[in-house]
Amino acid sequence: MSTATLSIRIRKDLKEKMKVTKINWRKEIEKFIEKKIKEVELSKTLETIDKALSNVPVADEPAWKTVREMRDKK
Image 1 (cartoon, rainbow, N blue to C red):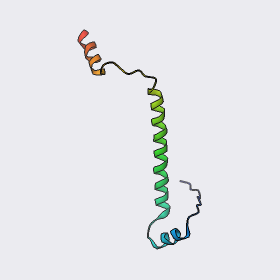
Image 2 (cartoon, rainbow, N blue to C red):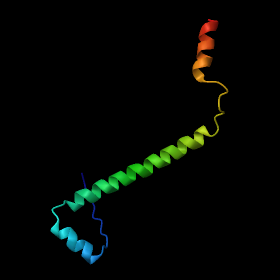
Image 3 (tube, rainbow, N blue to C red):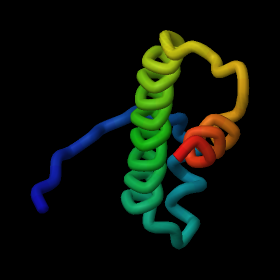
Image 4 (cartoon, rainbow, N blue to C red):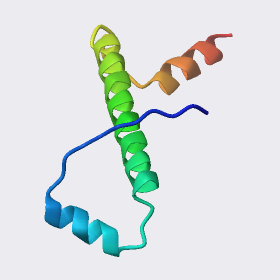
C-alpha cells in the first residue's frame, strides 16, 4: 500500500500534549479519516435511495396482504 503525506497546523499546546502521550497519532488520525469518509459515503448513498424512493407511490395496503390474496386466487 502506498502512502501520502498530509500536513496540518495545530496549536502548539496541543502538539506538546501529543508528545507526552504514548498514542500512535498517525494511526488514530487515519482511523478518524476512514470513519468520516464512510459516514459521508453512507450519507450520499442514503440520499440517493431517498431520491429514488420519493417517486415510488405509497401502497394502500401492506405487501403481505396483496401477496396472500394473489396466492389464494391460485
